[in-house]
Image 1 (tube, rainbow, N blue to C red):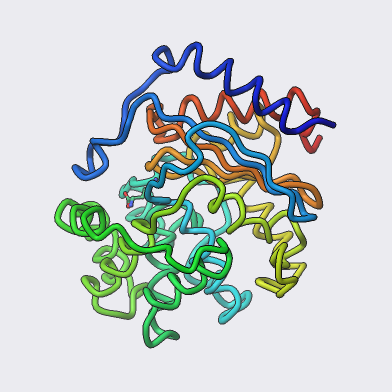
Image 2: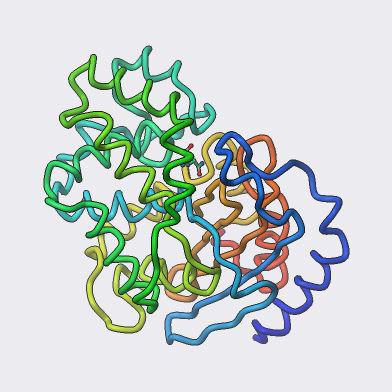
Length: 306
Ligand code: GLN
């Protein structure tokens, strides 16, 4: 199977229609609005450590909601199944930043990949770490293989200044006794996690453990135990793309996670981690060209799990 050849074909295909993909760059966080509309990159890490890549591979961007995978990983390491008393495991069927369900369901978010669920998870993590942002950054530095990965402080600040919906969710959870720490402190940590910046190769490498039974591909270190890794993949399959998770499962057939920075990561267990980036988002907040590229990748290499 020639992965590099397939990536090259996808790149040519995507480039030819890059202006035609639906949607627009995220602008509800002002600092994200200047992302290049026609940017595109894709990288594949196989579990033997081989990397295949194409497009604007050295362009960096903030990983946004993709950080929620690592937030959950670090929280599961510390809390195990007791974490599920605070956050559910069901698809939400609502937008990633929706507030309504949280009120009806008494402050328990549907899953850890919508904003409310990630904030609750982040709050749990905050209670167990003395320097959560530093810990998260250090973990990404190790996983990505780049010790200089950093936080885009302009984006983090912009998110904090315009993060009223996220603040509303956190306060609503606090009113239901599902938020322990100071809201502003946890929001700052959450926005810093979202504003961690890297390129597409580093993104694919960082999450390689999800395709490798929970072990880092390069060091062999256990990032999460094999059973929890399998559970995490299952939850990504059902909820990783918010209220478009069904469409992603149908079109791409792999567990995945998107972020409003325009990146998506997806996993083929025991084979690959795949990352794609293109900043124009559809109405669900998922990269339009990224979805197309992943669908092509899955089709051309017959990678759908079912
Ligand atoms: N930082 C973003 C927010 O909280 C993350 C959302 C996303 O990537 N879907 O709104």
